[in-house]
Amino acid sequence: MNKILLFLFSIVYASIGAQSLTQSFNEPAIGEVDKNYSLDTSAYTSGLPTAVTGSNVTWDFSKLEGKFPVIFDSIVAPSAAPGASNHPSASYAQKRGNIISFFKSSSSPQQTEFLGAYSPALTITFTNSAIVATYPVNYGYSSSDVVSGSFKWNSYSGGCNGNITVTADGIGTLIFPNGATFQNVLRLRSVEQVTMNTGIPVGNINQSIYSYYVPGKKYPILTIQYQRYEAIVGTPTITALAYGNFDYFTVAGVHEESGLGTIKVFPNPFTDYLTIEMTEFSGVEYIFYNPLGALVFTGSRTDNLPVAQLPVGVYLLEIRTKSGSAYRRVVRQ
Image 1 (cartoon, rainbow, N blue to C red):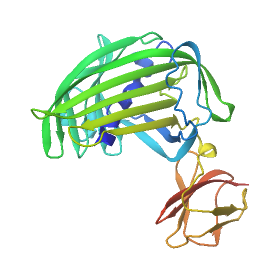
Image 2: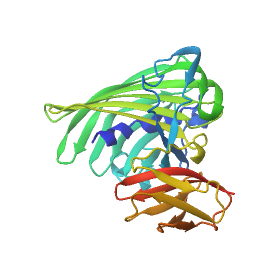
Image 3: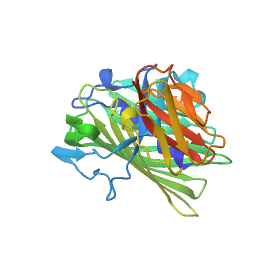
């Protein structure tokens, strides 16, 4: 359940760009696709620098690494999405896998509202929707709104209520891996709290989302999400996720660590053949992706892979076994 809830508000921040944020430029449009890598944050043993706020600040994310595969968020017409009947006023919907979030765009006043979400396990419908952006948005922007409605989670159903607060609390320089530096970056912080009840409280979700935007780009280049889900019984679940826009975290920066033991891939760069040496060969599959995340070649041989048909370039090789997957950056020259 918590994975679904974590996603509910994530599209909100695709509707906000950088500097002076306008509805005409920054709001998502039907037919668009936002692509992001999950990010490995293990190098930040003391935590990510999300506490940095103010003007002329610096956020150092140079130790982040992309993790494959790419995550796709598609902006679709509400009528084409499951659960649309619960949100007749929706202007657009976002689809990530089997999770759909619905939004309403208003011109007077210029604002974006979150109406609710649908998945096979969980449906949330806000009768008092969440206003997530009132345009224009600049550094120093602050907005708070109360939300309420109903939910259905598997065999449970009842009411839900809470609030959402959005602030543009930072502007400055953002440092990415490989020396990439971005100036005039706007940081938005959103804090959401939702309580679900069936006559008595059955769960609380508290979430903070940090989104970083560069001038002239519609979607954030970095998004960090923290969520705490606490049921009336049981241990609270805490989740932390980071996503980096695929324009900036290409295959060349993907994390290579694996839990499959020693793996040797050679020669690299390669030309006509690629040799893989490892301890586990039963049921092994080799999958090659291009920098945009598209599958371009698969194989199952345990000696030399015939990869001469691949165009010259950089690839991500996934070595998939029954025990899990390992990843290697490889180059055909």
